[in-house]
Every structure is written in C-alpha cells, then in structure tokens.
Amino acid sequence: MYLTLDAIHAALATMARCRPGTGVVLTYNQPPAALAGSTAQIAAAFAGLAAEMGEPFISRFLPGQIAQLLSEHGFGQVTDFGPDEARAAYFRGRADIEIAGAQRLVAATVAPASALSGHSTGQPA
Image 1 (cartoon, rainbow, N blue to C red):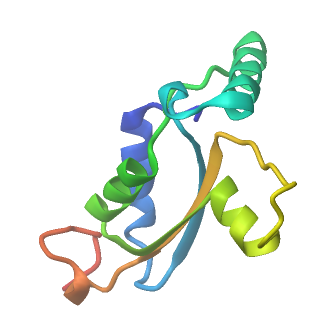
Image 2 (cartoon, one colour):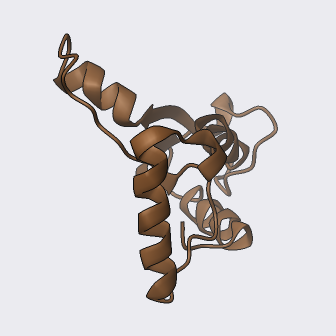
C-alpha cells in the first residue's frame, strides 16, 4: 500500500534470495474500481485518513496481479485470502455475516530453482 512498485520489486527480489520453502505473508489493497458497496466506502475512508496522516496508499493490486508479481520473482504456492474466503472459512452458511474490506492477505513460498521456468531468485541452480 505504502510502497512504490519499484520498492515492491526490490523487496520481493531480496526475499526471493531466501532458501527455497521460505514463506512470506503480505497484505495488499485492491484498487477502488474493484470495490463496491460498503467495502468501497470503508476503503475510501481509510485511504483518506492514511493520506491525511502523510501515508497515502501508493500501490494497489487485484489478486491476479499480486500473484503474477510474486510469480515473476520466483515465488510459488500463492494463497490469496480476502473477505469472501474468510466468510467461507469461518462463517459457512451464515447469510447474515458481511465482511467488508479492500485489504487482502497473500502467502507465498520461495520456489525451488527446479520449479521455476525462467525466473531468477538469486538461489544457485
């Protein structure tokens, strides 16, 4: 959210040099155009507050975009978790539960060099 795309690439490149199997969990926000209803309203309010505090949201991603970014840096086993996944996991069958939120979690692992097709993790082959 608070990092430029260049800074995100640099951070992922650094993390990708860790041993294969190393895990990383990140949060990210989705772009406003991907949101609707109360989720859009809450996200806009939080973005405004963050900007007022001098921490504007700089980067936002769709789930497929963050998965692609991680893949490009040599991460595999990408698991994305947001409001819909939380509702299914913790409130199955409960139509009265609404979970709003633009922020999502994504977990991934540094893939072994043999599992990568043209990706460089900084790990010796």
